[in-house]
Image 1 (tube, rainbow, N blue to C red):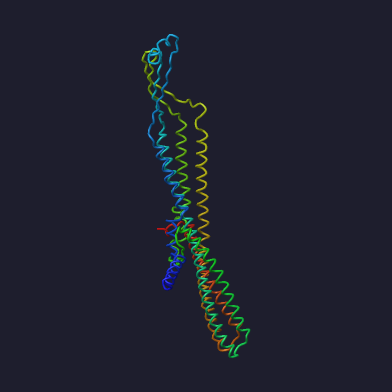
Image 2: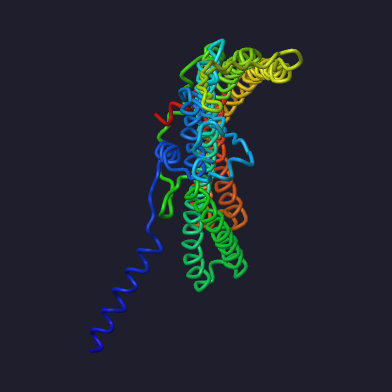
Length: 419
């Protein structure tokens, strides 16, 4: 019985451990693609497409005739004597049957359809812009998570080295080779690294939770490899300007907004013409049959849709001005991002050289300290320097990656990471 209970506890523990630590690992490119497919807010925005597509259906509806019926009864004292014929007799009634239809002029129906289609295109372009911003946000968050992961690796490795030195110094203290203060200094450094490990683990957990939401994942996520070549930009600076004009999604939104405004202006210009209403009518009056035609049209003396036409013109001017502004902004952003990326890439090479030198210094000082040829202060200083330079190198690596992602973002090339 005890064995069964023990086995049950073991199974429950394993299941709980699996549920607590089940994680999905994503590289940078995988995380971007996952977010582009499953991000909750992007899915919400995509519902706008069928909503606006329904306007196309509404605009394309065919003519819908209207029927009008009226009944007039002649009230006469003599009619009350014959109740059976009071309501039935055509001599006491006047009937009115009218079938009419309002007509479109100046291709008003087609222009409504065109305007509705342009609105759908505008919504789709806005979704692409949302996706571009989402990819940029996910890439930066992924890199922030990655740097914390790398920092945690460095902290743990460094603490392991310091703990190894603690065990060595404990033996050396027993043999009275060193003073107690040297062991205490080493222990203090180990405790400092342990506190940094705890703080970094908490930050990493928070970043993972945020990344899980952006990716629309059901399980906790973790970062793996950087599978994007950040060493070389695919285009030169001048080519990036031209590419952004064609492919950057916020500029595409502005271009589509102009087309939508133009379609709206054409529609409003067409709506200034009155829509006639025509039809046929049947009008039996007191037993005499009448039939005829019906025609109705507003007289556009004061109402020529002036307000909506003026508004459409202003919206078109606004869209054109916004496009020019965004094109100038894109050029400035690309120029700044390109030069910052080049600077960050040059700094990374320098930091790599510094890390190699600090590693050599640490190995030399460590060997000298174990041989008794230098002090604990020199060794601890070399250890801190090596840890700092490693951290600086990782931050420089993260910085060049972020600068690369930013350059892709401002040029419109970032959309290629989703494909």
